[in-house]
Image 1 (cartoon, rainbow, N blue to C red):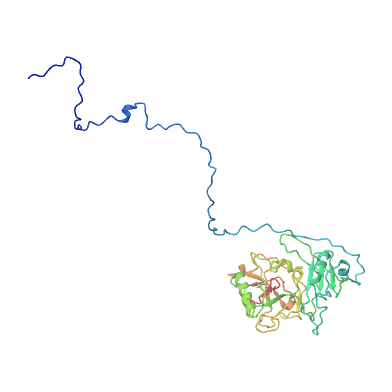
Image 2 (cartoon, helix red, strand yellow):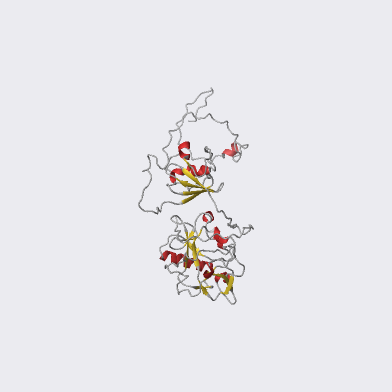
Length: 378
């Protein structure tokens, strides 16, 4: 029949759960729910956190780096000049003075030394002359100076001889001026008093500057001053000489007086190949007198030939190109010793016992060329 009608409210029990439905459409994006959110805008900066109190363990030391380049030279150390030492009263110049005993300096006869040297050789080659600025410096170096040595003190022009236990001052006599200035820019008046020639018997036992001739005559065309210096150097080496020899010639850039080292121009004698003294020192050549020398003292070549008598040098003339003061003579040094048409150079005659006569000659002539040791070999 037809279903009945319930006239009263009633609760019906739920039916069984149905199967799951199909998936729904995708939901809205996040922006749609937060329209005020801006993804590109940064947030506010937070507060600084507290420092961490726990530190890590230190790592192992690294490998040492490559040493750096050396640094620049340091400033020079202090130099002491003229140190003050007590000086006893000066007795008469002929009386020996035992300076070291009074000032307590080491002497030759000290226990550290072997006592005074004795030798059967009448010429002791270890003895040399010495030059000091003042007496104080001489006394400071006394223990290094052997007995019998001569010492010249420039301050006051004093001369001392070294004794076994002291010094003896020598009296100087027969003084003559005669040292020209070694600066061409300075004009110095020197009285033209020619020193007496050195006696032939003097053979210097100490250091000397040798004056030696090239082995053959040479024209005024010598490949310049460098070519002449090269010949001097080569022939000196072949002769077994240890010093540095340069040509006794001036040029546009070189004065004769400047060839020798400045510190040795006034203190070292000039001698021939065998050590026989020709001049007392280098400066004595340039007093304006023409550099007079003793003709009894020969001038030898590097081969030991006497150029004043040997036939290999038929003309006893020496090229130099200098005035009597050791300064270059303009246009009188064979066009820088390269020759050329009409070139002339100054030369001197050995027969007149002078090295700086002022005679011009054509540079096609073949004359003697001298070489001088520019410093004492060390």
